[in-house]
Amino acid sequence: MKFIMTAATGVLVMSCGGNKINTGLSAEEQALKAAVEEYVPGVIYDIYGKLADETASLYTQLAAMKASANVSSAQVNAACATFLSARSWWEKSEAFLFGAATNYGIDPHIDSWPLDLDALANALTNAGAIAALDADGADATGYVGASALGFHGIEFILFRDGSPRDAGCFSAAYNDDALGVDGKTELIFATAVAEDLRNYCFELQAAWDPDCPADRVALVEDELELNTVMDSGMTFGENLLGAGEPGSTYRTWQFAVSNILVAGCSNICNEVANTKIGTAYYAAADDEESLDYIESPYSKKSYVDFKDNILSIQYSLYGRNGATSAGATSLMAVMKNNGYANAAALENALKAAVAALDDCINSGVAFVDNKKAAVAGAAIEKINALDEQLNAAADWVAKL
Image 1 (cartoon, rainbow, N blue to C red):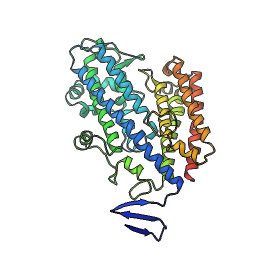
Image 2: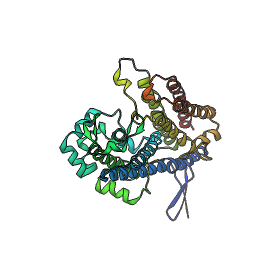
Image 3: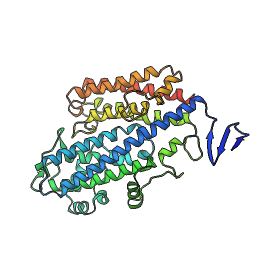
Image 4: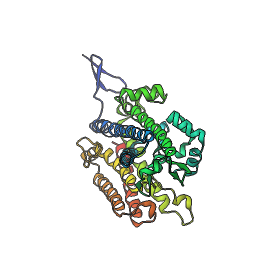
């Protein structure tokens, strides 16, 4: 057993068998560290794991539909349900887009919108492109272009006017007027795009979680030759959990938590209020581009997407995926236990934002069908109020 007092810092380090315990953290820093240690596996790893699972299932289901001589309603409904589940997990991940989703360009690759129907139609009426998509799957998605890939390309194939399409729409005898192609061609496209979506969601999981299933890591690293570790050799999860240690990009626990609150939670808060809702809500009557800037218009799940985005903030603050109240070591608990004067205001703002989006959902009118709805305007106000509280909390954390 060795005790070493460093001259520069006065930090006491106890070493036994190569294991070191740094006792130089303040009580507040220890609380922040514990909160991050709960949040990273309990929120990020868990949600990215479920996203990877569901996109893998979606690809399997669409591949089966593609191979079917007669697609059944049960197959279509099951694929639509899986799509919506996968979509929900993705939206619930958007409070931690910092990291792999942004650094590796995964977010725009799998979630660009609005869908470019002209680009999609051009690709699907190209016999060579369809032959390549049929034979090579995800490897041939370059024929389509990024504006028609990801969730929304698949959404358009599976849903119309807020409902799953009829099974007959996926036959060779059916011609889709919107694209000018038959239903089998649409399934060839959707299956290839679903494989591509699954691959990038595997990359997300592998790039964060060092315990990602080995077969997924192998697919991402060896077959797809995509990134799973940072330049330091750490996953993004290890990097965040190693705040203050050599190699981590987070120099202190205060910096790490402030990043979670601003680059993560505040960022998606602002996007939901002022881009996802605000672009169409505030658009002039003749501004067709802005009025058409609607996420998930074919499934008519825009408001559900927005609520899931805010729930991703809730889970981040409360420490666990699915949490409805603050865990004992969560970020919210750290604020309450360390005298943050606006902790209650932050929690109330969170609850008000979720309630406002519940009002949107319960209105029974999809956002795409009424872009100027009063409930949408009220939601913008409540979400912006939450954003202000998140930034104030980050300022407080930075000074701990």
